[in-house]
Image 1 (cartoon, helix red, strand yellow):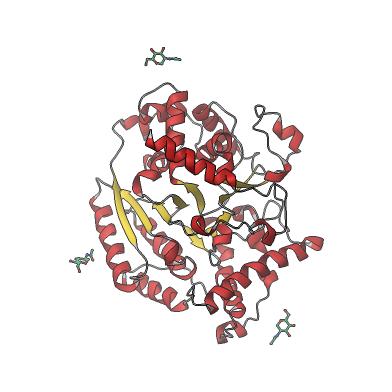
Image 2 (cartoon, rainbow, N blue to C red):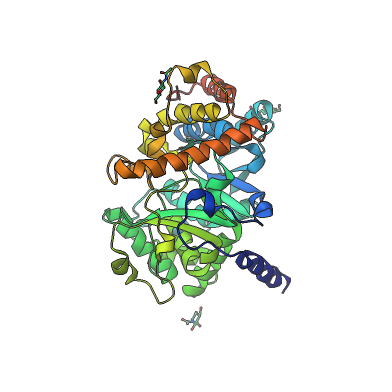
Length: 423
Ligand SMILES: *[C@@H]1O[C@H](CO)[C@@H](O)[C@H](O)[C@H]1NC(C)=O
Ligand SMILES: *[C@@H]1O[C@H](CO)[C@@H](O)[C@H](O)[C@H]1NC(C)=O
Ligand SMILES: *[C@@H]1O[C@H](CO)[C@@H](O)[C@H](O)[C@H]1NC(C)=O
């Protein structure tokens, strides 16, 4: 009773704020007044990984950890790493990261949680499964992220994702809504077609778009719970293992991000700010959706109005260069002329790749987003971004220390691991 009253109140608060429904220049989109409280809501940076696998440990240190201490302000919220409960190696890794973080980065709060195996073995391993049990476990776990934090917002990360520019509140929120990116331009990929199949099985509703195109994926904590409850009801089962078995059981791949955000599209649309790009004609695309759930022009965005703040390293090694570019553009905007940056003399256009919907596809799909007459818009978006970051640095609201990168690199060396250098 109290729960539903609170939800009702939250709903009223959210909807009272008049959403800006037309596509406006970036600064106008964020000019809501009563956003202060919600913008200070704690956000958990959440990562599910197998801690015993050396390759994943290296990814965490080289990619996520090393870039977090540069570009993710600790005031935004804690980091939670979810590891395998039954694995000794995972407990060992958990201790290592806690020790390192406490000792070298006390301002970053870190929690390590452990997740037990699902009871039914068939959840992770079944004849014809498209992926191995370790991978399937990540898929399974992705539906339970709400169990590992009480913060209202979860920033969903992978261990091999690195931040690429300072994360700002403007890149997370549009007013009180969480920004969502997505597109349909990968729909010709066989595995994306399969995501659509398994997603539709889970929800009984059409797959909306490919939401595997960016990180972090910001999702309200309770959306995970609501999504599980909905799926169990739709499939008429009383536990989620049974439900999972009913939508992931054959050769079709599964994208939990796309399931959860498709759910959000149908049932919690007003809590999120949709910035989708379609390679299909909108009228044609909308034919699949029920009345009242069609995509409108206000949900579309051809060029991002905020830069991507992270990239999936394995699929875009060349984007490493942007880490230093973004660092230097930020320092410049703060009025700090560092030697390492003066040497390069970067300009905003060196950062144009960050305005792609899908950083994994920069070289294959929509390759020149900011070319020609789009350049001015891109320069404006990036200019506003670095102005905001520069002001925060000047006003001591944000630190941007390459020292932190060096400190993580030292730990990496001590552990006998190797990384691609950011510089
Ligand atoms: C972590 O630190 C504690 C206390 O300093 C120490 O006892 C433990 O051995 C350390 N664990 C690892 C894996 O380094
Ligand atoms: C749901 O499952 C129960 C048994 O688990 C069954 O009695 C009921 O008829 C099912 N409902 C629908 C709508 O299929
Ligand atoms: C830096 O680059 C800008 C154009 O991007 C140019 O106008 C300026 O002269 C360059 N400065 C140096 C010191 O190379």
